[in-house]
Length: 408
Image: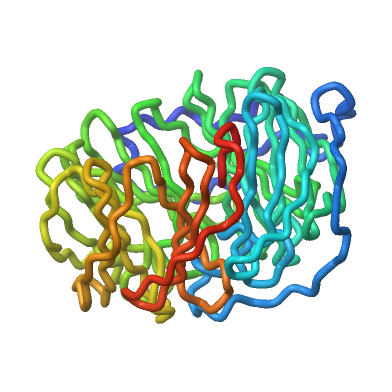
């Protein structure tokens, strides 16, 4: 699996100090050799439709968190968010290529429930790819997508099933990389990818299993960073990443009742943090302002308080590159939108309410640079879209899809 050239274990307390560059930690040299994966049993073919290749077109939103195909699902590169569907019972998968409220549907291959997946863009063609990992066997597969076609299906080195993964871009080349975390040993590692090939691999400092992480970009260098939060102590830390090197910084801690949501509320392409207190309903924003020596500097602002039944989703509803907040009340079905300007709410408005069988998802389905809201009724199988223009929502129903299917 991994090389024995592991770093000395770094405890949670060591997160409070800056890490040195980690250039001496490597995986085995043979890591990029493909594992000969037999897909015939576990990935059974279903019919593919609509093989037309479409030239990539960039979404007009100025902020990459709303336009990058590794973040926003866009299988044909037309700048419009698409939908991926999976039936956990049958293993069937499908896509909807979206054009506003119009859907171009097609089935992909069957993938049984032992396979987890994540969206990525491994070849930087502005078309979303799919990384598949078998949580039982440790097998890994990349589907490089071109619209409704799996243009390339490649196996990647198998690693122990104890390793979980997230998609990131640690070297800023526009090609997705993979962050690995071992749920047994608390080891961390990264693969720098070029398409299906692992070009560089290294261990990172070990963090105990009380630490959870999120993928971000705090310093606007085009390289994803990692935000760490200790679910027991409330401690926070940041790793600024440069390829396989990590520089660690301690950040102010918060009680564990506070949960973070990540966005860019001032539009400077540096990650900011929305904090919501799950007990009191308090909300605040930390706006990233820069680094100073061994410190990361945030400006803190208090936002209006809501009950803890309100859950935040981030988007950009007016297309100005600044993250806005869509709030959905999971007890009443009420909805409201806050248009943000840094740490301030510039506009807020109530939107139509829904009954509690409808769940919201965020995307830009017409490619106008403004985030829309996709609604899925998991009881009836109904689907709808609110096409957004600021705080104005225009609703349209879509085709129904059996409730056994999950939408992503």
